[in-house]
Image (tube, rainbow, N blue to C red; front, top):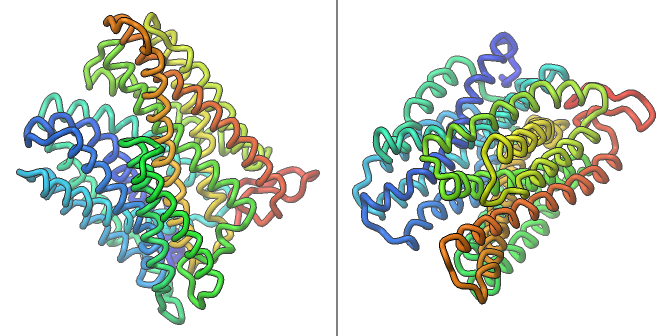
Length: 493
């Protein structure tokens, strides 16, 4: 029985609600926990260096296991793996919330990464196999993508409120009711796809992919901590590149590849993968540096900072459910995806104008809304393009590739932009008397440098993804017939 069975067709929008809850939990966890880290550090008494491991433990487990987890879902059943991921994530969150030591909290974060890696590709592949009608598929992916982009901003608000009014531990506990509600809906609504004829796992591919992704993500994390010239940074990045190159070689010869190369070598999917990686890098930079600006320069509390981000998910939802779906029906994804990235780049340019005299309504809000609307136009459409046309037996692998691109893009973007921001701040203070006013101006200069670079990355990404999407052979996901004919609805099979 497949996920597009009679039950799936009758309840597909309820299925979307279940999958959306799971997506929301995974996205919320990133920003909610980041808000809670200072309070957890004070309560458990660990250092700033140790604090970094609470982030790294999650990203290493999540990023390293994505491709393996996606393939496990294809082989053993996505419903089963989805539920295991939900329940495991809830248990890991309970362990983290009750932790009385740093070691236990790090272990809980790593377990969250493991079960998140099982959950995320399964959710995306279930979405892919549930929504096959072109129009409904576009709407479903738009909503799912909006949750992915806007959920981070909601996490900032929720994390600030929980930390300020309850305890940092509730930033972990909040995952438990979300996971249990999603699991309760998944049991009656979802159904596993038919088993593949020959259940096989590509062990050499699994080993090289997992170790390669772990080394690459860890190298980016070290770049943020130690700088790009550090031996640890360069060594792990080089090791990751070598292992992933070996992974490609293994996949070319494998009878049952972990990730069939035709999934990632398709030009349309290549353009979508690039858009997702660049968008994630830009989005995380806004959450990181704009949070600093709102709290340190505008003096907002964590709760007020979260409220200041609230227009972001609203604009994202409008971009994903209205802008992207309407425009894609008329112009196809090959124009809408690059156009959304260009619009987000313009929003970044507006944010790059911030200074010590800027205000939220006139200076922050316009750029935040424009950037969020642009990214909303891109994310769901790019997810649908990246997974459409894939055989149902490989939907988990395609979903894992989407998540892996976002994870690698986010890790690289955070490391790169953080390094550039710190460097710009230091340069602004060189040879000056470090008065409070100059320190404030230098920090804002660091943030705006990151926004300028984000704008450049989005612009370059828009140009490259446009070239890839325009030159792709039409096979449905980009919603085009040919360059002269009117575009069909986007995200078709």
